[in-house]
Image 1 (tube, rainbow, N blue to C red):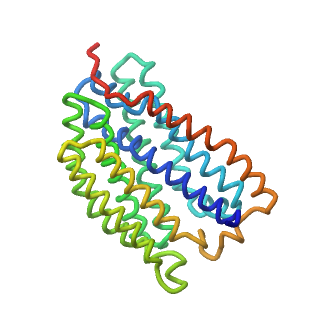
Image 2: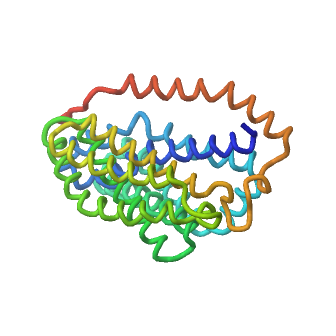
Image 3: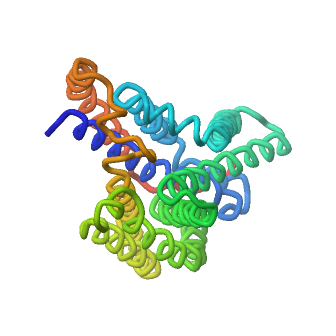
Length: 313
């Protein structure tokens, strides 16, 4: 495998990992006010992501850093073409981070309300905008961007609701399951529209038609999304969360498959890549560091795997 192909696959993996992990973070942040009735329940909901949300953001930092190092022309073109959405994403992530960090340090209800608003807005902005950016990158149209944004936002809500149902007990768990069923009314049709558009976009079509495996990934993503709803309805939150995560992962595979080998119009991966020496050094660094990072994050999820209960203050 050529190093350019290898690093494109690595970047696709990092972005997909970010969508899978931050997806439920964004969903929980948006749903916290709807799923909680008092301060104890609000802490219970936000506590589901408390130990992991900042670690999940590292996937975005690593993905963007890898793009900058391995494909500087792709990095520059993507960030300049979508400058305003990216700035809004960063503003949202800052608001969310400040809200999550400050919420446990303030004592007045009004201050906590401002933190909750920052968490909600800071979760909704990236959840919608990343879907819109990548959809526009594929199809270069406002309707496609809107469809991609609605799909990513609704899937994050579904992913987050299932995660809360998996990680909590009592009334919050029941509300999360009901919310997941309500959100699915939007997520399923949005998924059909957005996912069916991926295989028919990108370089593969221009070169003679979409690859069958792109259709396979898109159809499997739809199937997993539908399975997640059925499993949530049956109270199988663990399998439902696996299904939503699989749907997002397959969406990422289809997305980056459609972007290969031209991630930007008129720019191929080979043209965007750094020199062989840079890619070689990056490969050695990645092979040494990445297993430790993945191992540490897997260990942190294992440590905080138990359900949370609301603590009455």
